[in-house]
Amino acid sequence: EYGDQGAYSLLNGEVEPAYFSVRVLYNETLSVRRVIILLFALQLGTTLFVLLGLSVLRYDAGQLVLGPLRRMLKIVAFYAKNPLMPPPQRGGRLEPGNERTSFQKQNAAYYDSDEETTNRQLGTFETEQLINAVTKITDLLRKCWGVAGAGIISSNLARQEGGLTTSFNPTVPGKAVYALFAFVSIDKFQSHLHALKGDIMILINDIAHVLHEEVYRWAYHERGECNKNLGGSFFMVYKIGDVTDVLEKREMAEAVIFSKDTLKVRKRKSRQTVRSSSIESRRASIPDSDKYSRSHVDNIDLSSLPGMRKFTDRALLGLLKTFASIHRDKTIMNWNKDFRLGAGVGAASINLNFGMDAGWAVEGAVGSSYKIDATYLSPHVNMASRMMSATKQYGVYFLLSQAVERLLSENAQEKLRHVDTVTVKGSSVQQKIFTYDAKVREDFFLYSKTENQADIDADRYSPGIWDEDQDLVAMRNHISTEFIDIFNRGRDEYLAGNWPEAIGLLKLADKIMFQCEVDEGFSHKSYNENFKSNFDGTGETEEGLSMGDGPCQRLIAYMEELGGEAPNDWSGYRPLTSK
Image (cartoon, rainbow, N blue to C red; front, side, top):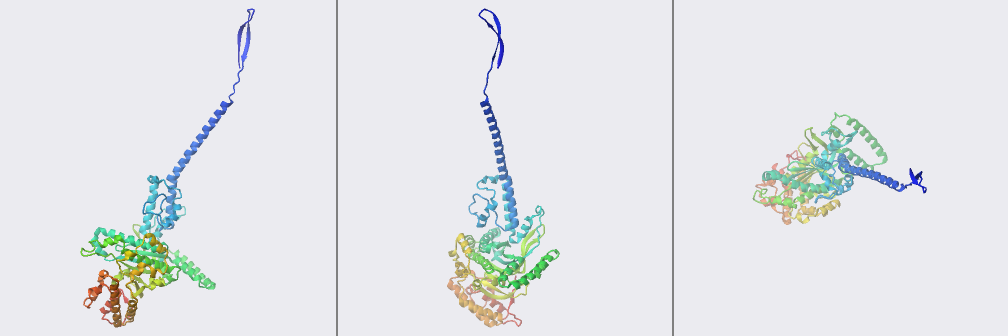
């Protein structure tokens, strides 16, 4: 509204003052509404932008910091629970030849819980590199220490109250376990070492590749582990379980047989044993070996455990399949052609010798805070080593102790041959030793299978495999019923002390073996030089010595060295003097 004073002229010429005013009304409702809406939209946009920025920052923090840290803790916790599990495989594409195993597929969600699928450029970040480093370190621990070092890894990675352990204690107490033990040696290793020099490592790794693959393939429920390499030999462990676990399994098996009243008495005794053992466990000054001896671990019949025969069959099958694979693997066959191994005068032959025993052992670490070795300490480990060494004395590739033979299925036992009854150094226990009559064949390649087919065969194991598998049938083609009957008679006469008759029967069995090998087309490449000196001057030809039967020749040589007559103190066994 506006007002003012002005002058106006009238008709008569007189001027008189006059007042006026102007009132204007403006409608700004629409403009104000637009401004308010624009301000609201600006504030809303600012809020959304801030939230979006925070979500991006949160996503980056989760992907690059929190997620990797969680995965690292998962890896550590997972290995603390079971250090022998295969290493985790991350999501995304895998390199050729590194396809996931079935176990890794089952646990893929565990390691890929942060939904990392295609963003492979994350590998350039420090956290991702740290994850890879942790995974590699745990994988190296698993492969270097094996099943014997599992307790060391687990006890040092396991969580305690308030978080993870802060100190490293490598010399954790050992524990008693039951297992099958196997030693595998490379025949003529010292000769190969001098010939190949630095390349011997390549040969060992090529052999280890074949051996480990078959051991892991045929081991029951992945219980077979290659514990360590000792230069020219490998040590395998097929762990049955801790002593306490084995006792529980045995009681479960007995529960099916015994009545409830009997079980009450046994359970009462078991509780008393548990209470007494718990008291003893608190006495740190008592060595574990004393407690194991008082529990009479040697008196447990492992064959009564559920699934034990299948477990042992598969362990032996893995070694037999290794024997066949070594003689058809292309890489190993190329080594046979290496002029250095043949000394420039002919083709060489890479052969392996196998020894097995079963029983208890103390599993743990030996050493100090400076250096430790995860290993097994037991007379049964020594027995497996001596079985391996004795294969050269008997001219065979496999020697099994009586403890192993008792754990095999009836089908497998029928394929074994009792070659002698002996005692070994450091033990007065008499025991039978057995061999699986395997012969090197040049046509093993005819029975080769793809890895997938070999895995299927292992998964479909049945006791009938001992009569149906092509490899097993082929390597025993030289064994006839007539030979087995005559050898068994000769061996029994030898053990009974009737040595003149035993020598005659064993020589006859040796000739039958020679003729069988000739009929089967075996060559003199299988000749064992250990027996040549034992038969010099006997009128036998070198071709006859090059084949024949090793155990027959060994027993004949032993008896003839003592004059062909059993000593007056002969008790039906002989000591094995060499380790």
